[in-house]
Length: 124
Image (tube, rainbow, N blue to C red; front, top):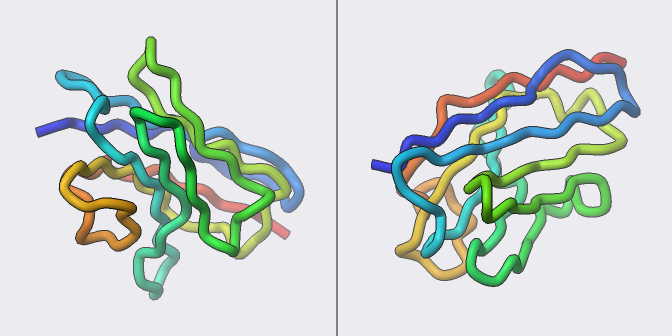
């Protein structure tokens, strides 16, 4: 198991920024992709962004491209999701996930380990 712990969620206004963190304890992300997903009430979980730990290569969903940035801190074994220009439609529970068995993972099922989620609420 690679326990993952998200933090940084909260209630903000449209146009504000938040930074989410995903920390791994017990093991490292070294061989993994780390992704962020989100799930709004009544909707399916959707892919937001991912980073390949070893290379730093990133990939984003079209809905967040240009507004969100995923990054990593090797020393802290932590992945971040910087969210700028937040919109009410970004409101969701955000989850981080890690996986190493699938190349260029984008589906929930491509990831092996999940955090508990952190709520992000954007008011208009």
